[in-house]
View (cartoon, rainbow, N blue to C red):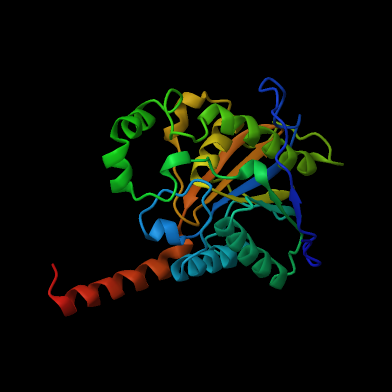
Length: 287
């Protein structure tokens, strides 16, 4: 279904890409913002999700609204390292939890006169967790303890029974990511490295374009490895909290981490949750 205001389209998963093909357009000056989805019902129940679909919880919807408000006013203090240039598009996994989060971001951006194209791309689907999907962590540990331990230690040699391997996910993520980066370079000149590279000297937001990808922790691990040309064996080196924001700036085609896993915009919700939990524990005598 198309969204009249945002021109929403569903992009089919691209074919496998040659990993030796250039991923980042030559000379690209732009910014990519990565946003993980909010809390879903399966997360709240302590279950593995993978590609199992589940809607956002009430807390997840609040998280989505808070991250949406933050992205709609990125230069309010403390400013996010996001350009003052045009927002090109919002791309998201087609699963419910990511779609709901992207819709909240789209609505906030539209209210702030920053509307742009929104599209779903199956290349950003979360890793298929096969037999583990829908099971509680304790159930997986009891029934698949050996496989789970191996997955955590050596993710390229072991994965969920019937699920996707890390290389298989990387093969579909790479062309989806390339399809996000290409429009950021379209019609724009090549950037230059001949400029200040160290932050803190009266920095001003860059003027280049930017795009947002709303996705999943597992997929974003692979996105960051691909951008920084790191081996897939480093899969576990990245982590993103629910509705966390990461910002990658491209300077003449060179990726630079400007922020990773920002969650300060969720502080009000976290404080309210902590107060509620404390009241509940006090009422029932728990320590």
